[in-house]
Amino acid sequence: MSFDSLGLSEPLVRAVNELGYSTPTPIQAQAIPAVLGGGDLLAGAQTGTGKTAGFTLPILQRLTDMPPAAGGKRVVRALILTPTRELAAQVEESVRAYGKYLKLKSTVMFGGVGIHPQIDALRRGVDIVVATPGRLLDHMQQKTIDLSQLDILVLDEADRMLDMGFIHDIKRVLAKLPPKRQNLLFSATFADEIKALADSLLDSPALIEVARRNTTAETVAQKIHPVDRDRKRDLLTHLIRQHNWFQVLVFTRTKHGANRLAEQLTKDGISALAIHGNKSQSARTRALSEFKDGTLQVLVATDIAARGIDIDQLPHVVNYDLPNVPEDYVHRIGRTGRAGATGEAVSLVCVDEHQLLKDIEKLIKRAVPQEVIAGFEPDPNAKPEPIQRRSQPQGRSPRQGQGQGRGASKGADAANGGRPAQAREPREPREPRGGNRGEGNRESGRDGNRSHAANGGGNGGQRPAKPASNGSGMRTAKPVKQQGANHGAQGERGEHTRRESQRGVSHESALGRPQQRKPQGNPGALLGGRPGGNSRRDGNGQRDR
Image 1 (cartoon, helix red, strand yellow):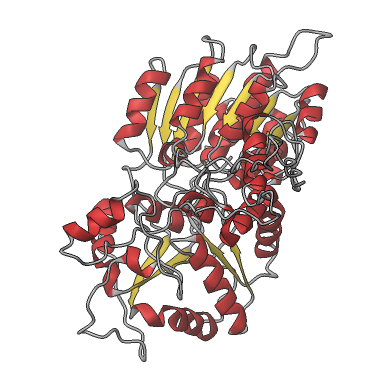
Image 2: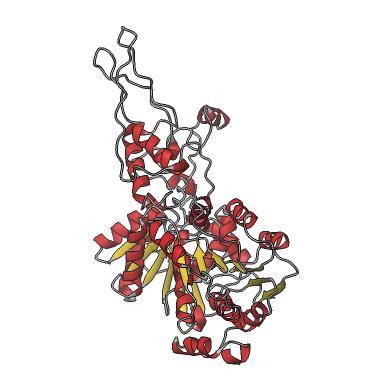
């Protein structure tokens, strides 16, 4: 079977052939005719089997066959939602590559970058928009995007969007869309929650499942290396040097762990960078670019990158830490062995992770082969430790009551017979939406808030103390607001940034002495999140806007 036999036009087939593809994958062979038919679709396939082309090619074909009104302005007729920035950029790049010979225009929108270029692109007119939910809602709230004439909606990696807590954002978007449209739901895994979402979103959809749910590709060779928890980094360095590995994608459980591992590998003489939600978009883009062109040997990532890294012939994926969610293992190792290529997935497993390994093997319905590396044999007498307790950075004790209500820490101690309550693993803050009214990179503003909070500025969302009276009924002058990198941003999120920047400002009393305020616990500020703890996170606490 060839692409031209699927009903695609000659310009699309020519573009696909120029990219080196001649035969459609199973998901493409089934999805393309279904989408061209105009009905709703629920499709699932293993990661790396070509789902993106499975919906971009027929969408380009349908929009070409349904040209907009003559002389009218281009309107958004197709909307593709993705959970992460990297995946959004990757999908939009595919749209442009496949549609290079068509008269269609597309744009990508996500947070962490200025909003004004996106507004300018929308004003000029586009046919296809690829976006993350948070930035799309920014545009909808500012009325800079018109979706009233939308014909096709795609939810890509829908399972990941549910994992990351985007269901409420998706519902807000759906409420503003025209009811008559084609809905396409694509997912790497096919959990029951996905089918529940499909029941509420799709109208008599075609169902495509080219492989049983939650399976790993046969082209990926999986292996487990048992090792003591304190020797993982030494073993990773040994494997990279001994086998002369290049382009190694390493996954860690937390952002702090990713940063620390990248620094340690660099000290070992192995070029490495970390990529995660706390990195600015420019840093993430630069790290991915260097990794793709081969100048960077190791890229250390958290699960936020598991759906947005698409590198041809990526040879090695390493699970430095096993994921807490078994499905994430499927997505991680799916970065290699893509499009029929072979790849290797290695997991470094210590005694603390044996239960996580059992959960993974139960999910994928197969046992992963194990190989002990000479010189790195694990201690048979080692006792497992709680992963949460070990996740605290060295030299820093967990804050009491972190992530709990007041008094929770004391109550937990009592419940444990006087022993300190086990510290929960720090949850990573969600990524910013990228700013309101185009104030630029919210990433930098949030980093500034986090630095301020680390220096004692966070106060749990309490208002600043009122200026003291000077005895004559007059109050001292209000402190001047500090000007942050993102000062001037309006709206709910901009106001939050300004409040954060003022929290550390002390008010002078009539005697000229600064009033001392009792510090308030704000684990959210310390971790870079919003006060109040009302953000939604996935297993790593990550959200991408």
